[in-house]
Image 1 (tube, rainbow, N blue to C red):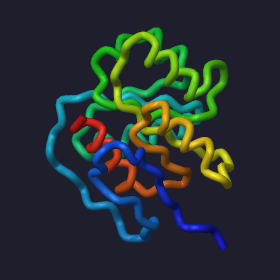
Image 2: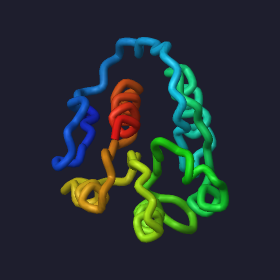
Image 3: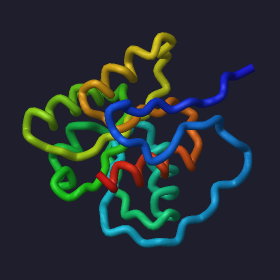
Image 4: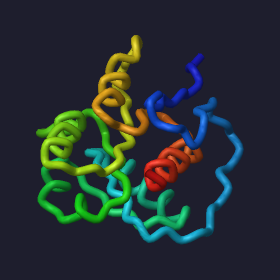
Length: 155
């Protein structure tokens, strides 16, 4: 039997939500429009497309990138309100991109997503210590991701 999804949030920031077990009820549609762009960096094309669709259905503008390098080559980092970032990427990893952005003075809020086994929670704890807003384990619920993004945009 699979364990229920539990998201991890940074303890030093005021959480806008509490992580909860993934439910089977449909996610309610949010209709408000947001001016901020949400950047998604994940090497899985199907997940990028699904996240883009979810974010747009919630009123966000979304731009997707298959790698950290392509994200850096764009101007999206200067105008994004939040970065949804996979931990394990080809080339530069998610945590490496996080460190690069921090060194360059970027203050973009980051929501990490990962399918990586993290039994002791050290991976999520590490990226949270380095300033990420949240670390969500795949598969995560739509509502959990949207709550994390909204919390990030409110920063």
